[in-house]
Amino acid sequence: IHSGELVCAYVGAEDRCTFTVMGDVVNVAARLQETTKQHQCVYAISEAAWAEMSVHPENADKDEIPIRGKELPMCVYYV
Image (cartoon, rainbow, N blue to C red):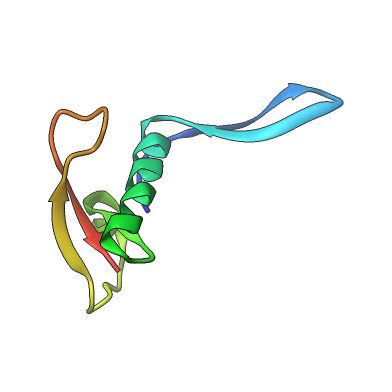
């Protein structure tokens, strides 16, 4: 789970149209989802999304991990 700005749109011809989302936030969310397998959890929540939440799970583990395509590691909460 990540938070940020993205572009969403229907793309394609009238007879073959699909909905898509694009942007850095989408790529980061996909990379976070990949990390749930190694942490054996259901959710990986970025620090940006965590800051937007009004309620925080008590059983969350915090870790700082490298994200492919990013220079700096990212703080992630695992639930």
